[in-house]
Image (cartoon, rainbow, N blue to C red; front, side, top):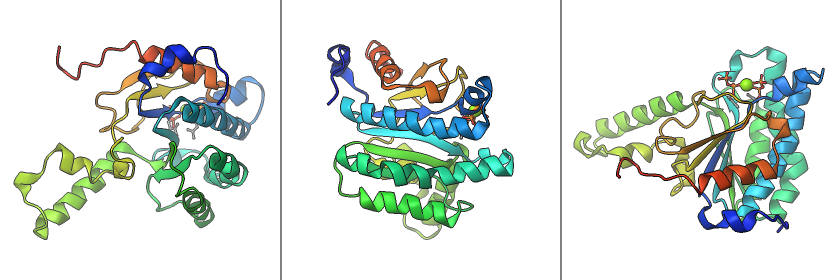
Amino acid sequence: MGDYPQVDTVIEQIPDHVAIIMDGNGRWAQQTGKERKEGHQEGMEAIRRVTIRASERGIKVLTLYAFSTENWKRPPQEVKFLMQLPVKFFDRFVPELQENNIKVNMIGFKDKVPGSTKKAIEKAIDETKNNTGMILNFAFNYGGRAEIVEATKSLFDKVLSGQINKKDISEEVLQAELLTNSITPYDDVDLLIRSSGEQRLSNFLLWQNAYSEFYFSKLFWPEFTGEVLDKALLDYQYRSRRYGAI
Ligand code: IPE
Ligand code: IPE
Ligand code: MG
């Protein structure tokens, strides 16, 4: 456990599920005259800092948006670099994840992801499967709309085969078909953070963010630190979540 003075003021209401849109790697690199991929490389260090701090703060699930279903539109060499990042990340950081009792999970579509990347992710999941601390949940080749479409297809099949009746389809039943069923009971996001000053969802956890609190930071992702996470947590505890009630 690190010794951070502001922890006493944030410890009261730690959100269970924090999700982060890690944005601004490219602009961070650009402003310092580097190539975009150097921004992604540096972004890995931010992932490490924030993961450790989140785990120390008692967050149950930290979901990180690492690659969207729309990011395939980027130049092939950038896509290739982004696809290789999980291999590099887990190579370097699995021992540290182990030390911190952190369990790796992934949400996203496996199609189109290179075999070596899939293998690295599966290996990290397997190596950390007995850890009982925070779940580090990577959204990789993830898209919120595609997720809902797939859930719909799955429900349709279940109705056709008579496994369930149409009248029994509820929010809970649909939610159980989403990719986030791997992090139940923390499917819903409590606190959504986006770096780089952009204020949009970019197809991230559309269903699960229905009642989350939003926190925007102007910092580019490679500049993000544990202290910035603490600031977001501090902000969160003063929010009044009414869920439509008074
Ligand atoms: C976030 O940084 C990383 C991914 C989307 C994979 P960007 O690459 O989007 O950086 P900007 O937004 O171009 O600065
Ligand atoms: C969202 O960032 C996706 C990830 C962080 C992985 P983008 O940079 O792709 O989003 P837009 O294009 O600015 O909406
Ligand atoms: Mg971006």
